[in-house]
Length: 74
Image (cartoon, rainbow, N blue to C red; front, side, top):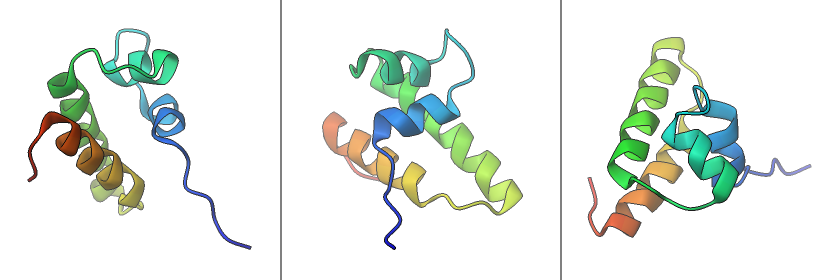
């Protein structure tokens, strides 16, 4: 059986830190209100995952998509 990667909205709903979070806003509406704030929160999640040695692949994919939306790459 193939593992299905969750959508970015599902991923955001899993990782948000509460109703004032940019990830929460994105998971609720599907719109990007502040891309820089959203990216900062994703980097925080990536840092937490790497500290715990969790899988960061989906978070990196989300980050890459946002960077493309913003018009740059890291």
